[in-house]
Image 1: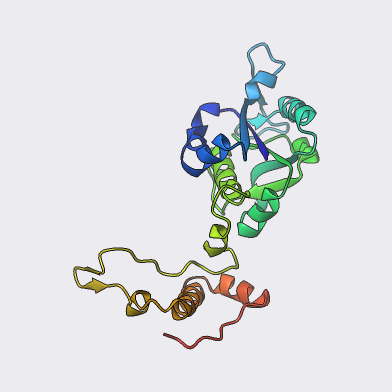
Image 2: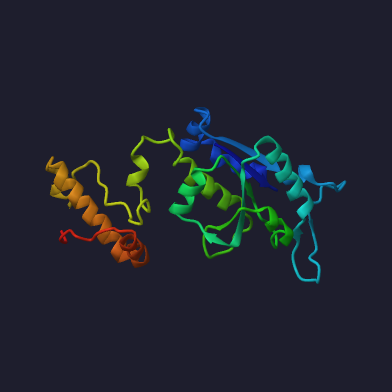
Length: 235
C-alpha cells in the first residue's frame, strides 16, 4: 500500500519512522510519502492560506495548492482514495481502519487553521475525525489513522495477531499478566497458570465481555447486534 500525506508541517511525522511502521516500510509492505503543501503554492511567498470570504477570524487553506497536490499524487497512484481530517468527519474506529487497509492507496489531507476551502470536499472520498475535540491541525489525526491502518496490512503483524486486539469485534482485550506471578501480594489468576488452554480461552473471552459491558456499554450493544453472544457464566 502507498500512503501520501499532504501537510504544512512535514517535520512532525518522525513517529512514522519507528517501531512497527518502520518495519513495514523496510519490508516494502507500505510506502509513506510526505508532501509539503507549500511546494504546490503558486504564490511567490509560498502562501497557502487566506482570509475567509464574508469576514471572520482565522485563515482558511486555499483550494488551489490542495487540488494540485492531489492531482500530482494521483498521476503517480490513480487508485488512491482521498481522506480529509476534519472535526465534521465520521468518527474513526476499527471498522473504518479495516476498510481503509483494503484500499490500493490513500491520500491524507491534513487540515489546519480554520479549515480548508469548502470546495476541497469535492475531491474527498472520506472525511474522518478521531474524536470530539479540536486539535491544532490534522497531523496527529493523520498519524493515528496511518498507525491503525498499517498494522492491519498483511505481513505487518503475525497472521492472527490483529484479531486479538481491542475493538476487533467491538470487545476490549482481556486482562493480561506476565512475570512475576506474585507482585506485592497481587497475584496472577490461577486459571492462567493451569495449562488448560480451553478454559483459559473461555476465561479470556468472558473477561473481555465483562470489561466491555462495564466500561463501554455502547460497544457491548454493537457486539450483540453483530451476533456476539454473552453466554458464559460470570467468573
